[in-house]
Length: 251
Image 1 (cartoon, one colour):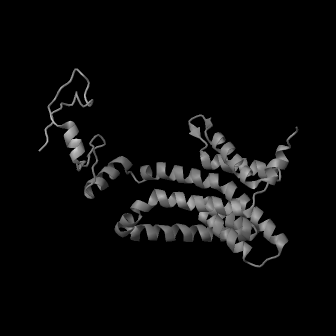
Image 2 (cartoon, helix red, strand yellow):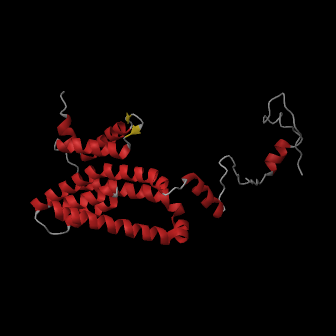
Image 3 (tube, rainbow, N blue to C red):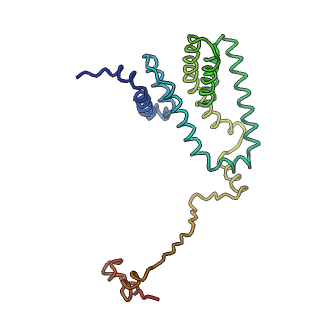
């Protein structure tokens, strides 16, 4: 029995989706010297290679992936969202407005300068910001824009292509910026983090652990009292024969 792998994957987009994820995770574990590609980049590279071979995934699978992404983000950030928002929400809001506004202006300017279509421009914007919600939002906007099917297909392809190409650049830029910008400002991140922790009353001692007391209450019935009355823990089978602490008596 011969199995055509290409036909099998093209006929089952769920299988294709998880094959891409598995191969991407394996590729992301590879190291180039001291640099590891990472899971996201590995999946993007595998997606580009399989897309070049004309593999495609149903839109429902894309929606499923986005819902899983949003769910995981909510589970990870949800418990601390409101406390951080009420404390530093103003600063984060201003930072988000500046980043989104400047990135949008740069993407539109470059798109007009080089003659990119709207799909490639939106993909470049989403990838440079490493923002999956921007990618999904742009795709939904294109699908509901009412443009011709041929132009829509080309725009969606360019959207994914632009995102994949600029995601790596955006990710590397974030890493380099987080690593070297504090040095340019003559700031020590570790010292600043400890200072903020002290100001907010957080524990800065990594070796200190605080355990909450555990209190258990039990209701003992007359049958258990009659069974344990006058017996020690060894006779009850709780302690080994070489240890004896005390006897139990009914009240």
